[in-house]
Amino acid sequence: MSKVIEHDQQSTMDKSEGKKGVQPHAFVRNTRQRRVILDVLRSTDTHPTADWIYQRVRERVPNVSLGTVYRNLRTLAQSGEVLELNYGSTFSRFDGRATPHYHFVCERCHRVLDVLELPVQSELEREVERRTGFRVHGHRLEFYGICRECRQAERSGAVSVEAGKNEKNGQAEAFHEEQ
Ligand code: ZN
Ligand code: MN
Image (tube, rainbow, N blue to C red):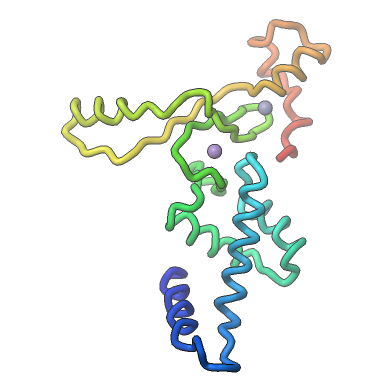
């Protein structure tokens, strides 16, 4: 839907080119907003939520609305410039790194981290095709566990090295608000 609006504005701009005094305000504003959104998203590797992005964008575009940020993120995701990581029923997170890669979700601090150390295993797709007769266009792979920083915090705290036992005993609360 938002794509259609964009095209309309684009063509309006094209037609108005050369006509003095006709300014495509909406288009310019949209383009600028989208550039700021991309900027903010690409400046972090935390895979932020739309709300986090909105808070940062607002510092640079004071009158921007959350709805506008959402709409632009959707458009950017549709065009493949960013990735939208959907986590079931909860909010999406966005990823400024648009090339395929894997993720790690920390069960303690809930950060989503890139796993660039492992190349995308495209042979898995061929394997699934071979076994099922489906045509596979891509795949997502996510790892779950405890991230390096949380493991370090665990080790430097009073907690013993018996990590497996301590994981269920809270300790995590302090990290929950961390983005
Ligand atoms: Zn963590
Ligand atoms: Mn990523």
